[in-house]
Image (cartoon, rainbow, N blue to C red; front, top):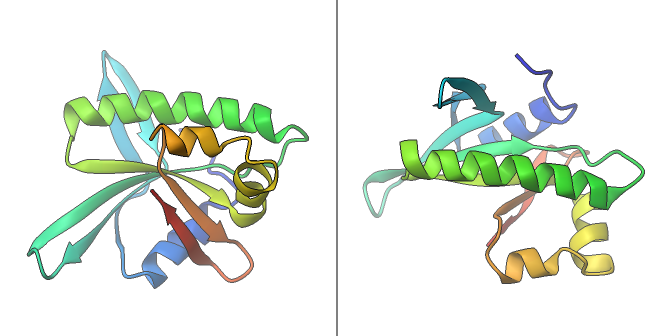
Length: 139
């Protein structure tokens, strides 16, 4: 089993604070005789609709010197997991979790990553590690 990201427990706590129930830690993905896993699986009851919203969260720290290299690696993993989930569990949405400082630098500062959001290439969960809270869900 791969090592957990340094922010794993922080994101887990942030989801719990936001009224999500952690259902998998990690969420197993089996495809073509391979055993992969997304960092977390969670669900939340949508009372008005009387059904559960299910998500998968892939957590990345973005600690390397090159944030773009981190983004490239994370996007590759996210895309593979997203495509597998679409086949085996299409009602579960996948999100890439990244810390607020990385989001600010990549998506707001020089807006390098904005085209990924504009083209609906990924969904983001932005968290503040200092207070263990979710700051943004995009889109």
